[in-house]
Length: 171
Image 1: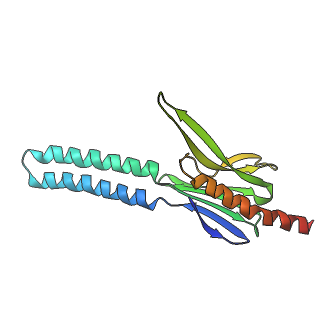
Image 2 (image 1 turned 180 degrees about the vertical axis):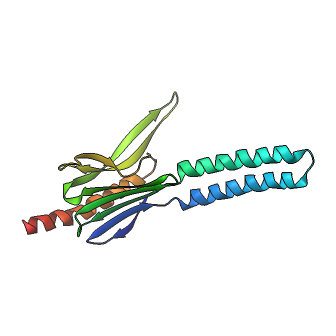
């Protein structure tokens, strides 16, 4: 996920997994193409070719449905809103909160331990401290490694003080 727009009135964070989607489409095409090539050759390979195309293509489609999801978070000062959008093959979901309820953003972590090592994964969350939506709201569902979550949290927290200054001026 990355910052796609950072203006005084709007901050947009978005993630569109183009690379994974394109690679999965190539995976599907490779298995279906190879299976259909075996079918077109005829002979003993017809049933194996059909099986190869259906199972390989089906696994690719299943992986596409599970892993290819678009996330977008829009923080808009003019509308006093936070819009969290999630879109996948199965549908579209949009959740809206009031921007004035947003206290700050934090990084949530989860540590996984095995016998020989441990690894920590992170995800960014928005902390709303008042209103009907009070609580912690993850920006994305999955945890990941690296600095991505920290960078998003830093961007949100850097963008917020200007909103808090505007609220003080209006009061």
